[in-house]
Every structure is written in structure tokens, then in C-alpha cells.
Length: 409
Image 1 (tube, rainbow, N blue to C red):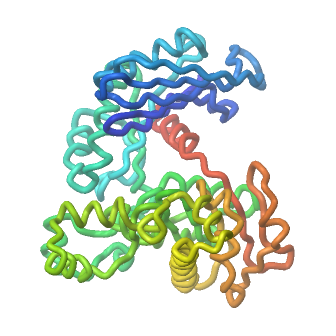
Image 2: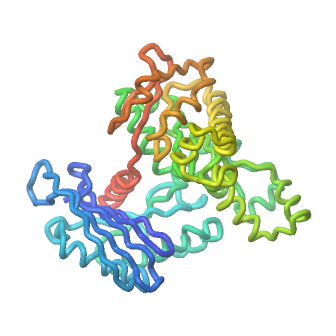
Image 3: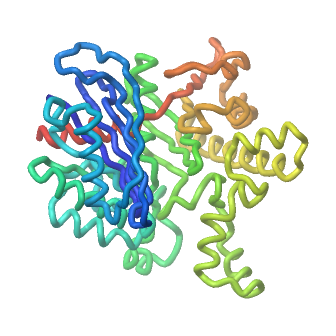
């Protein structure tokens, strides 16, 4: 059997997906949310008929929703288990062999998927200092899942792990070295699971050896990052010690002069908490335009909205700046891929980001770029020296693959 339960847990919710790696198809998915908020909400979706022995699952999508008190993650997992029992697929007939957990921050300690032990839990908790919004929720999910599935191996898959191959010149900040070492200040990078999946999927799609390719992967969602991948290894990435650095995002500022914070503290009497909220929740395209969804931005641009137009131009300017920098770091590029919600669904963003890269051999086919289709597709011209792709990401599948590899030893 090769069925894996993948869990992505936050402080007040968790998502899950049951994946059969024999077919690499999801059998069920769900979301348990508003944990600890009185009345919780649990949704469960059966994605396939899940009949044992079927070589190809028969589609039978069906969704179920329940509103019940969910005081903690442990009760949340109990609600999830009841959903599997009532609506399927049966966890007896499609029993998971392991549980994979997404953990955002592994620091410099975790550079590969890791079997969870009490010591690993302690380390994840200590790393909450670097990811206070993410690691505590992941740890709650791990503890609840371990209680629900005590006989299964549990594996942590870290967002930062793929970027452990960054060279020192890429991950080192130019601040006092002793201070940086004492407080673990360095670039760690994020979205690593997605960047790994996409870069490997691109190589497989093109039927070219991963080790021969210089790639740039744009993961553009509400959170956004870009990574330079040389021969399958991350060598440069835009997010830093936290997911705040780098590209302009939905509500996050990305790169900003640190002195701006000193200025706002002195002149606007803003506290550290105020500045944290400003850069993480009231900045990015939302701070510039009032909305954070790229679809809304593009609609307002079409309508002639000046603020939205500026936000869109600032967003594209940063994408081009990073693309140019990473082409220089790689010494050229063979493949550029776009993924995640914006990257997969916005022809305007893709075209704008690539518009000035003709010097590097990037030629976009306007008709291909506008075509909406499922799966990996080429959006560059046939004679383009650089292949530009849209590659749907699948972080859950990547977590499942890594989890099974660890579970099998």
C-alpha cells in the first residue's frame, strides 16, 4: 500500500489530503477551520470512488460540510476521522501507511524530510522564534495527528529544506557576524516544496535531465517567491529569514529599505507590533490599491484605476528585477516556470514579467499565454531559446512522495 495522509496545520485550522501514490491521485481532501472559536466548520470532499483494486479510480466527487464545536486540534482530527467513516473512502480499506506534515520553518537544522520524534517536536517548537505564525500551529497538528494515528510514522516536510543548498554568499546577510550567528539570522527561503516539485516536473515534461538545466521558478500566489535552480539545487531565492523579504505580495511589502522602519518609528510613533502589521498585512498590492487579489487588481486596471495600475506596475517591476538578477547569477537560463494561483492563472502577469527579457532569449507566444488549460503547458514560441512554462504546483503530492520515501526507510 502507498496511501499517505498529508496534513497542513495552522493555529486555528488544518487542511488534509489522502493521496494514493500508486496512481498519484488524491482520494479525499478536507478543511477543518475555526478551531477554538465556538462553532467550527469541517468540510470533506470525496474525490474518487476509492474502491480497492481499481486500476484507475472512477470520478465521484462529492462534498460534505458540518458545523460543530471544535475546541482544539485533537477534536478536529476526531471530526475528520468521522467524515472518513461516514462518507469515505474507508481508512480501513485505504489505510494510510504514514502521515506527512507541512512545517514552514526548519531553520538550518532540517535539510530533508524528517521522521518526527519527541526531539524533532522540541526543535520545531524552538524554531517558532523564526516562524511564530506558522510553526506553533504545525506542532499542534502534529500532536493531534500522532494521537489519532499512534501506530503510523509521522514525517515533517519543511518549506525551508529545499533551500539548504544555498551557498553562503546567497544566504548570508551583511550584518555583524557574531550577532547573526547568535540569533540565527540568515536567509532560509520558503515555498521550497513547491519550487522543488515544479523544477522537477518541468524537467520531466521537457524530457531533459534535471542536472543539466538552469531554471527560474516563480511561485506567485498571495505569498510570492522566486528561486534560481541550478541542476536541481536551489542556489538563490527571494524570501529571506522570514517570508516577508523579496517580491511584492498580496499584503506583504517584500523588499523595503530597513531605514523606513526607523523613520516610521520616530516620525509616526509606530511600535514594533505596528510595523509588523504594516509590512505583513497592510502592504503589498493591498497597501497600494486597497485590494489584495490579483483578479481584482486586473479588473481595476482595465477600468483605468490609477492606484491599481501603479500597484500592478510595481508588482511587475519587482518580478523583472529578480528575473534579471537570477539570470545573471545562473549565467543564463534554460527554463522559466510560473506556478501557484497568480502564476498559473494570470496571462497579464506572465506577459508583463517576461516583457523585457528578450535580451536573454525569452520569447512569449501571446496566443499560448492566453490559453487556459489544465496541466503543464509551454507559453514560449517554438524558436525561443528559453522555454517558458506554466506548471501547476502540487505541494501535497510532493509532501506525500517525500513522506513515503522516509516511511520506507
